Length: 266
Image (tube, rainbow, N blue to C red):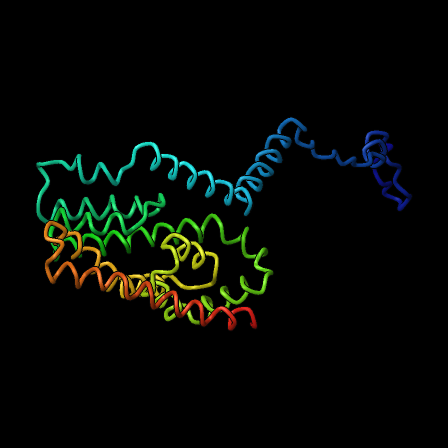
């Protein structure tokens, strides 16, 4: 046969079928690229996610939430609802717990605590009213601190370039417990301002909450006792409570006046 090796040792002749097979060169087929229509939505979704989670987008959300809260306070005046529209079926510890929750939400919405603390004393008396007011104070401070830390810190920290802002930030970041304790003891700093300033700084959660709870006791007690004894404004208890309100305010003003040069020099 033509395609077999001869028995006498001659060279073999390749068959035409084998020669044709050897000449075939393998050709690699490139993988099909995904269609552009499939990758475009994924890229658009990623860009939208980055924009929504950017620091300034979160800060805009914080501003919108606070503006809505402040507007609702101006429209509905929840502090009056606490006094005039309190559910009569609620009483005792349950009523104090509900009051503390509403108290905390009202402080986040910029309702001044000097309006809420006497109300707690008038509704629940000195002891239970003090517990409700302190619980609402810590709850409201924690909510404001969390909102400011999550939604505002990344956007606002690069703006801390002024001397006074840097000094305040450094004081809260390095000495958070004692700084916040002083801010709560002396009522010169607004409650909401201290909350959001602490949130922008590097102050930790635990020092902030502990300082808020401890530092708010004297001032809150004075307001609650004043509210509980407001029906007898000439009683010694009411007069002592009013002195407990006025003296820390005066002391805070004096300390702030003396420390102003120290802060400017830093």
